[in-house]
Amino acid sequence: MQILNKDTNIDFLKLRKFAMALSLLLIIGSITSFFTKGLNYGLDFTGGTLIEVGYEQDADIPKIHEQLDGIQIKGAVVQNFGSAKVVQIRMPQQDHIENAKVGDEVLQALRADGAEVTKRDQSFVGPVIGEELKEKGGLAMLVALICIMIYVALRFEWKFSVGSVVALAHDVIIIVGFFSVTAVEFDLTVLAALLAIIGYSLNDTIVVFDRIRENFLRIRKGTSDDIVNTSLNQTLSRTLMTSITTLLVLLALFFYGGQTIHSFAEALIVGVFIGTYSSIYVASPVALLLGVKKEDLMPPEIEKEGEEFDTP
Figure 1: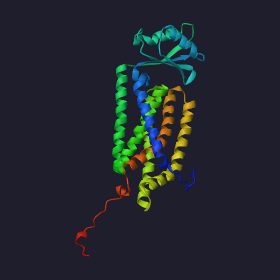
Figure 2: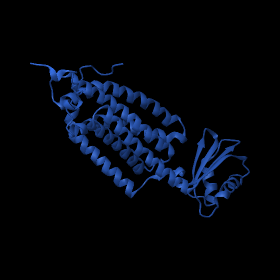
Figure 3: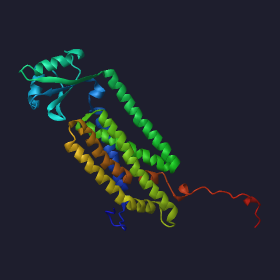
């Protein structure tokens, strides 16, 4: 499906200096917020207890908060899980209650008014495991970026490789900065979303790079800037169609998928916008900044057998 005219000719590169300044500003802001404010880590990283309970009637969330306050449970997140009768309670480690007893203390408080409450599930994540998850999650993203750089360098050219990795790092830093500024809980689902965004953004970038390579070999006249601009216009319809259809699914998950995947959907929504932007205004301009040209993509000449013996 073509949603834009085939003759679309938008001068994307005209705004690349402004775009680079904007990206630099967002990256500086994200890094500053991360080191000053930090992230609102979920229990997966900080350690704590998760309890899932069931009620005979619809659960009263504000009342549950009051009951937890009565036994001095601090920092609890209470939310419906799947239905109005099922509640999930996420609590950081409590100094005044042993981890082994926190589930019983909570159930006792919830049953104090005579309500029929059953414990459906309980799990505990220790702080050591949380730190290990942080390290392994960061290592997973680093390994992914290195593998991507090697793949793009082998498939295209090292200047495109650097451009793609810069674009992906740009996306990850800004999304982490978004979670730092908004203080939305950062848990394993968000980390999974970051890895998914790397794949999504890379796919978009590879499509653009493929078209740039084709046009470098096909178009005889024109500067590198002209060819990149032409390629961006030719892939724009596909980029918009992919982004719009993906966003429709993510918005449905965000509004109707429940609290459990709320942060996951939110990270992906931000990632689609940032990834689409970076495939146009980060990956290709960085390759141009490194001086990519037609000669870099020309296949090597193969010397024919016996050619050295030819006489003029």
